[in-house]
Image (cartoon, rainbow, N blue to C red):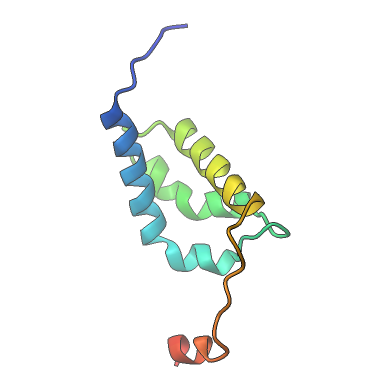
Length: 94
């Protein structure tokens, strides 16, 4: 096994790409309604995978692992429920 040096720039590039992919697909991700009783991370990966696999410079294994670990941590220990105002859908979808 060969050792590979990972610089802070590599890490920041991964985070930047992850942020860009999540932002570009935020509506589809929100439709998944991910939560502790609905941790459908496979569907999450299906939403974001095309952009990640299209970028041949990315370590796809690292991106997938990062996505799963981050989402698992967020779902397992949420800060608190998000209460939406009763007219939220009317405001957004009207």
